[in-house]
Image (cartoon, rainbow, N blue to C red):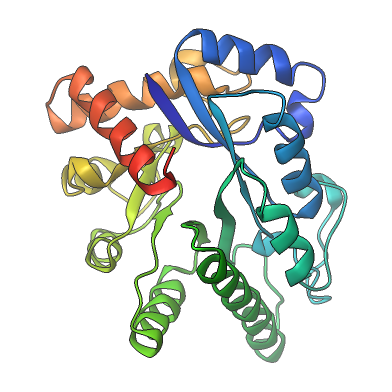
Length: 280
């Protein structure tokens, strides 16, 4: 059995055949965590999961780029879901997260890829995202749920926020860094905090300043999650086709190759890791 710990079967790319894709995945022994990016997609993820007794679970949350800060002009085709949200409705998300299918809060975090041009607006923009993150961390703590973190061009700020929360509250924040793209130093800081590290099809790409093989070799096997982030980041073996949960096997194979250990060990350990964090 494999667990795709980050899928988006609640996104429009699967609107016509989500159930077919899910059945195909489950038939191949692939379970999945279906991750929300705003209330609309989080609710849809819950509705999809409720059709299946086993094998598909949900994470709900407001992705930082789905927050309408009023400072960045985002086209609706640049993000998933038709709704930007001006603020985080704590009680609405809390009620949704009470579903027995919900096993995490996420994906939440920081994303500075699209940002305002002026220094003053950048500061306000970043603070709005930080405030959103803190609210959702509070929700995760209240519901005793782990967190699926998204971070792009903002690792140092995220590490600082999480570290401050740990110091102030003297409590552990359980979570996974989804689709980690960062330096070895940043990786080591996340591992010290206790986070799992998620790797997906982006490890097949070349990104300036990032050494995926070095990162993977330095991530203990008992801290690795495998994921697709489908419908995005299709592995080379898939060509230009839409990514699906069953393609998580290609990520597992590449990690096994980089770490020079058996695929069977990757499969067993990463599945155990996911079951441990998400309690599934």
